[in-house]
Every structure is written in C-alpha cells, then in structure tokens.
Length: 498
Ligand SMILES: [Zn+2]
Image (cartoon, rainbow, N blue to C red; front, top):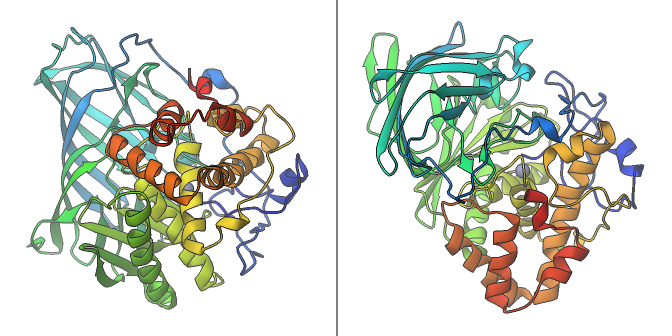
C-alpha cells in the first residue's frame, strides 16, 4: 500500500508526527495540498486509525514447534454472483489443500477480512454458512475476523477440502474493499485460509492503514456472474468469452501461484493494453481519469522491465492497473494494482505510485511475507523499487527516528500501540527509513553485489514466504559477508519476529 511517498528531509523524532498527521484517513476524508514533487502529501483531516491497543491483539492461538508452514498448496474454486444494485455478493467456495501441518490436525482458521469493524459503519459484512470439511458438516465459530473450524481430525500429508457458502455486503466507501458510484473494489473479499507457521495460526486483526494479510500461494478458479455491462479487471487470466444469459454475464478466471485474488469493476471502464517482456499490461480507466491512462501504461511497462532485470522475472502472464478513488495512494494484489486517483494528481505522482504498487508484485506477491509481523519486507522494498524507478535512490538518505523503541523490523502493532505518534513513526520507519536502509545496503555492497544478492533472494523465495532472518541470510550467503553489524545499526532485528 502507499499512503504517501518518501517523507524526506525530516530531521528526527516527533517533528514528523505533526507533519504527517492525516496520512491514514477515514474513508470519506478529502485529500488536498499534495505537492507535484515527490515530497510530502499533506492532508486536511486528523488521523483516525483503528487502534490496535497492544501486541496482545496479535493473536497467536497455538504454538508450533515443527517450523512447518501450511496448509500447503491451497486451491480455491469459487462460484459467485455479484448484484450491482444491492452490492451484495453470494457464492460458494471450495478450497483443497494438503495438510502438511500435523497429524490429526484438529482445527483450521480462515480470515474474514470483510467483517472488520472498519467497514461496518458503511454497511460492510462477510458471513459464512454450511461449512463442510471433506463433505462432513463442521463445527465453527467466528470471532472478530477469524473463522475457527474445529473438532477435525485431518490426516497428515493428505489433501482435505473445505466447502462453504458465503455472503458479502460491500461497504459504501472508497477503499480497497467497497463501492462508490459505479466502481467496485474487491480486495480481500472472500474467506481466505490463515497460515499456520512457527507462531501457530495467524489471525491478526485487520489494519486499515497498512496490511495484516498473510497467505500462501496457490491456484484460483473463479466464476463471477454479474450485470453484463460490468467491465472487470481481475487477478489471473480470463478463460474465453463470458457466458451471457439475459442481463447477466458469467466470467471465468484462472490464476496460478498467487496468494490472493482481487477484482475491480466499473461498467464505464475503458482498457488500454500493451505487452512488455511477454506480459500483457492492461490499464482500466474511466473518462474522468483518461488523462492518466498513458502514464499508468508507460510506468507499468517500465517498472515490469526494470524490476525483472534487477530482482527477477515477472512470473505471470498479465498485470492489471486499475484506476479508482480512495484515501490512500494505491494498493497491491497479485497481478492487480489499484491506483487511487483524483483530478489534482500529477503525472509524476501517478507513475511513482504505480511503480510502488508494481514493486509489491515482487515484494508481497512473488516473495511473500507476514505483512502484520514484518511489514518492512514488502513496504520498504516497494518504496525502494519506486525510488529505483524514479531514478531518485540518492534521495533515500533519511536518519532513523531518535526514539530507539521503533525498529525497521517491528510489527505493525508495536507502532500502533503508541497511538498517533506510532502511526506516523510506522510510515517513517517502514517506508522512508526502511527504503533508506536498503539503499544504504546497496551503497555498502556496490550495485553488482547488491542486485546479485537480490536475485539470489528472489530465486530462493519465489512464491514462498520470507522473514527478516531469511532476507539477511540470503544477502550474507550471496555476498559472503557478515552483515549483522549493518542490520543491527539500521535497527533490523530478526529477533523481533520470535
Ligand atoms: Zn506499499
């Protein structure tokens, strides 16, 4: 996600809190006053972030001593119907996976992000029913955004299948999940399997100003029936032409090796497409934002080319860049990025935000991470990628905050536990100082060794999950150097995640 871009030249400490007030805005807040340069974007509204009171909210419901990560190889099949008038989606889901977790696995968790409090006031909800595991009706309960399926006994190394019906009411709000006017943003819109890792099941709370998302890569086969006039951008590739039935059309999408599935629809969307490195790039825009379409296409192609060369090859056949409106700059999903526009955006801003979100295709999409526990592993890297695209790496030179409580490798909740100053510190330490840290590493190692190590990291973690420890280890192995003093000096601590 981008809520803003590098805040450069702030000196230290809480000077930034005052200057960055309003980065995380309530959905209907107005943004204004951003400059056309890449400097700070100012907002008029105060911060109102859903507070995450303490670390304890990062619920780890059991402990795993085996260092496994699962359930493995999830394969989702969904058949859903979206009503454009009521903004209600109903559907069925079937997800198969391998139980690599343990013998007699007794429980599973899914994240129901649409249930987050953040969406409730505007009519958002997500409910599940008729849950079956391997055909048998299963016991379950829901607490906050976590669906707990219990009293199971799943055999290790066998495939299991969960089926359920689900209903989603999209909130009326300009967000990654919501609708306004003719536009519907479908991010985090279906029940998604939680990850079981060395900390147990990950069912962290929803975090509106960043991400709590964490999922393993798998395959998706999604059928969506809706108003035939809708123009839909989606993760994956559409299979053939939609099947028409009166006023309705059924679209069929397939995606491989992706950790999520998002869509964006609007009946007035036009599409501008081109190819780069064999990848089809599609820009979806409506008349209001036609003036940005060429910039989105150009920066989309250029960033795919640049990051493929510097980090590793873009692995999917398509990328959709969709224009929408939101309180943030942009949002990333596999093969789909949402760019939040308004008429005052400069072409440079649009290109740079697009380059940041496309950077996430590498850091989050291809190389996954636990976005709640280690947000720097995707945000600092996407910010670095955007600066690389902008040709402004030399501007990544901010100092760390003077308050040593804040680490680059801290969890989201370590920041938000401090209220507003913590939220400002989050943006500063993760986006600005985190990308500075990566640039410092490049300067320390030299371009050749740095990008060689980044490629080795990409190869090792492609379609997997990385941790801070994994990143440091990959860089050390590739460069044959002890980088622990460098990371310690930059407040990157692998122990933060234990
Ligand atoms: Zn981001």
